[in-house]
Image (cartoon, rainbow, N blue to C red; front, side):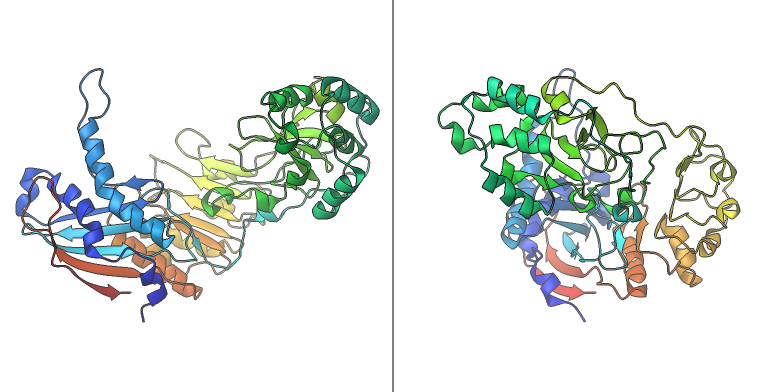
Amino acid sequence: MVDQRSRSSLPHDFATWEPVLRFLRDGGEREQAAHSIRVAGHVGRGSWSLPRRRQSPGFGRAFLADGMRDEMKAVERVRRVLADAGVDDVAFTAEISPAGQTELRLFGRSPAVEPGLGGPHPGTLILVEGAVPRPWLRLPDPVPGAVPAPSADPALLERTLRERLPEAVGATETEIAAAEARLGITLPEELKALYRVTRARWEDWGDDHTAAERECKAVGCELFALEDLYIAEASSRHCLWKFAAMEAVVTPPDAAVQGVVGSPGWIVFGDNGGGDRLAVDLTPGPRGHTGQIIILSHEANIGACLVADSLTDLVMRRRSGRRAGSDGDLPPAVAHVNIRSLPSIEAAAHPGLEVLSIGVWEAEPLSLSPVMELPRLRTLAAYPGTLADPLEIAGLTALEFLELGPEEWRVLLDAGAVPRSLSAAAITVHGTRDPLPIVGLANELLALWNRPQIIQTVLEGDLGPMARGGDGDTDGVSRDRE
């Protein structure tokens, strides 16, 4: 039975897609004119991917403007419909006969499937509703002996900022108490001292357009307003399963900052101007200080770096000279076996291994026997064709995430050997493989966990004989299939 709600969110009028299909068909090689052609891609509100090779520009020229204009014009109608329907993107595949008869398949978004990475193939399958990768569940370890740095001096901090920002409007004690109630945490004294000098509201600056720049120079970052403070818990650091499952929480014994995704003690108060967030750290690492200043990179999924031993040090331009902790001789929790990294699975195996990634491999396929008894192995990602016997995966009973090629998944499905411990799964597809069998494979996996399927909508229409450009009328009809 087709879920009509899934269908209704798709741009399911053939005429909506006709410019895209004409663009792909009429831009094909002339020798294809005597044969049906198959195309696949995706169109989204913010981006699109169409399988048409652009003409190489001449020396010193950018890609031909006319070609780009034609491509943008072709997708514009679909993008407008997507925006009106509140749909982010739609993947599609089409078969077009020489006479122009066309069968177009649209793949609706399942709530159990994360967005793909710009192509027509499905993204990660969420097999257990609400499941998150294990690193996103890790809380910081307690460090009973942690204390503020000797340099922490709320009085000096406040006095210095008042000298630098004499006209600033500070927060009242009532406003500070309201922020604490909203966050559910007591603000450290240095942070209170800062906001007593300035509450960093744009409306307080009036027509003074240089006030923000002065405040940034005075504090050492782009300061958030008091009401915009937030706790950088793990949930605030969104990451696709495909990448999050490849991370591991590691905090060396000499680390100043804990290697967690987020913490209930990371109070974000500013930005460095490039999208990286500064926070007061109330849950430091074994060698850290309570109240130290850390930075959360927007390019990293996990961990943070030490900036200053205290907020006072940040304001006084005293950066920390301490280095990041070292793992020493401990083997890594995340191991990469490929032609440039570890030379074998034996070299990766140890009791603390959590993530095993097998990449491009030019030798004989590999056996998983060296990692069969490892208690913490939760992620396996294997490049297609690298496993000697995919059925060995059935013995990895602690896996929560598995990424394989279509052929390896087929072996597991046919043998009824898909690990039931999985919370998420991904199908690795390289090149321009037909998305139809991949979607079918994804739906088989989703069905094992009774998860919502990827719904297909089939539209039929007539593009007419091959021609150069132009929007013609269609005599299209549509029908739905699962």
